[in-house]
Length: 270
Picture 1 (cartoon, helix red, strand yellow):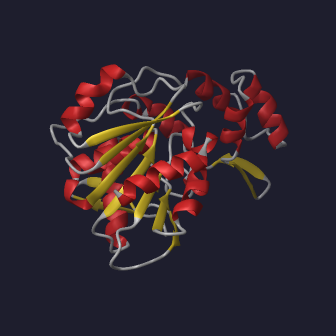
Picture 2 (cartoon, rainbow, N blue to C red):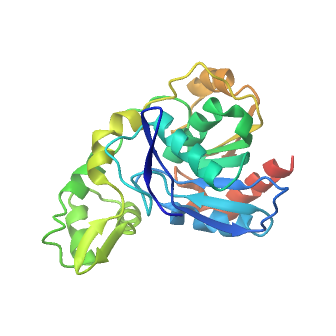
């Protein structure tokens, strides 16, 4: 899908880049996948391929990520409008939403704002709460990479190592390092992500409620969903259930994709 901006009631929104696959049926409800911070639709590619055997799957790049457009503005209400306008353009009145981390918060914001448009909601290792800053070292590492002087991905990895110890995290970030016309650039809008970071770690700002079927999937070794979050989850999503995938962290869908997909498919069939 082509990206562009438009004005609607003085709110700037954009149509998002999407990747569709699977069994298209105008009578069936599609599944929309939404990636996390610094990612792209490709991060959920394994899950997309598994689900597309039985469902029509739409994998999106949110604003300032992947192949979607860039903007100085970034907030969950605005991103929810992006998604609504994108689904309108695709002539999709209702969908199942599955989001990981930041994508899960966007899925929550959309369900709370447009509850009639969400048939089921799946949230991977994220709660509807404000989180403390967790990405300072990542921002420092990314800002330390001088794209104008960069000569190779290996050099970028070496520069990131000063701030980011985990090889898996570095490789995840480097997936968004692109070389066009002999120049490197990040697919994500680093400046906008840094400027809007406080909004991205914030919780939903709403008095709404989504009472449709909701599944929270927690990584057994992750601290993103905690017992203290149960009251706000029950308030916003009264028809919620939770499952835990043992032996996984925050990237549970990448660490154990088969187990993750089984939980999702069971929920979709329930």
